[in-house]
Length: 403
Image 1 (spheres, rainbow, N blue to C red):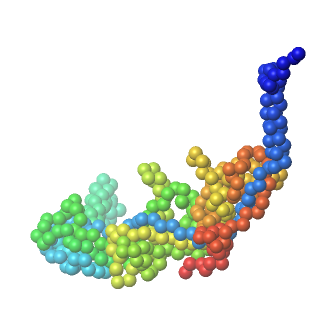
Image 2: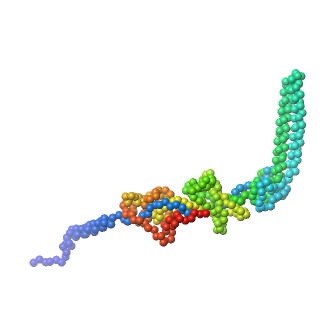
């Protein structure tokens, strides 16, 4: 009689149990592979890179104001200040007298120079007559050739002395005129830096400063990158050439108010600063009533309209210092492409380089894609009711251009 065991046959055979477990695991893996094959490439939402025109562009830079023309007033002769003619901080015209330096030493020097000129002229008259006589006597064989030549040379030297005396008179006249220090430009004369009775000279420093403040000049610095992005427009404006789109230059003052008179770009510096990597830009602004003064700090704001290739901001990735977009090729595979990004407009981002109009970029589903993998592209529809939606870029096309 046989005894019946209640234990499972698999338990009685370890090899048989292992085979069953392996068969079960392989079956699960096969089902997962089949499910994966049935799912296929992932679906992603894509948008086409499109060129948008008339997009608003605005940049501001901190700058300082300076006179459109500035001048440091110095003494050109040495002497004592006798009088300050102008009032500190007032408008003076070119040619107006600012200071008077004691003229008496220079008047005496002029009188002496004129006396020496008269003496030189009298001597030249005598040598001239002598030359005429000696030339005639030589023709009559009454004097030697050497005597005639000496008379000619003496008269030439006397003429040179006359010219030197006349030059000395002119120099003395100029020095006497310099005792009246005049304004070289029309503008505001600053507070005097010297007082009546002070001894001044060309080496003694400034007497005062002057500046033309209507128009007034704004000086600001833009980075090399910013210059390269807009160099064509900036240079065209500075050189007085026409630009295809309007450009408005404003000043935002320290109190936040916008100066009511717009300006124009007038100059771009020759070179980029090696220390700061910036380019100096200058703009002129009308300044009626001389409200703005040199030294003010102000924001220079430039507004214009540009044409740009836009993609949704959500399509742009920034990783390890690189800016990338996932481009869907015509064969519906993905390639990660580095691009150069510019300004942002609403929910759009301008792409300056690396992308062509009409190319498709992945907006949603970036976490599903990898280089060279196939995808199923579906059109991306932005949420038009969301703040900052991509429709803002479309609306910018119909927005009015700045004044």
